[in-house]
Image (tube, rainbow, N blue to C red; front, side):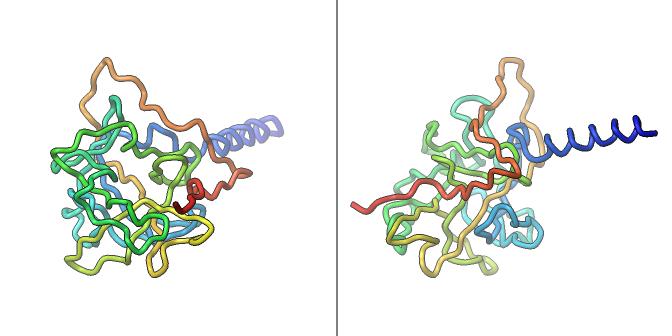
Length: 219
């Protein structure tokens, strides 16, 4: 009996050590839900969800799931996201800028554009050890900036989250957001596809990194 308990304890500890998200969870085809949260450790896709991103990459309510965009995560370089509207990016200069933000005033809203050619800088990624498939960008930044939760029939912009000594938190009057991947299918299988790479960082119980990205400076 003692030996059996020891074996069960070993397997429980092994499962706990390997629990959480891995890069393989951010693949294929899915929706992107939006959570109103400033802490990934306590965020809940059930309690904190305020909407989803539509085919154009805009924040809408998720009451009608059919209106949520269907995103494809490319399994080849540059491993970016797209919808039937085109490739998704924060670098579309035709999009609304976050003029309320001290450090993000020149940032363009996320958009999916048929004329845009993706680069590696458009890639979103997740981090091994997350409780859910939260999506990050750039230099380990996992939060986003929005004006408010969407009302019915509203389509709102979403920006990267930036901060600095003159604006330590979210843009005043805005809300801090997380994006979470809701996988709904697989891409067609191809023999010559390598495993999609991700960051080397892995979160553990003793490593609770804020994941706010680098502090920015004005000027």
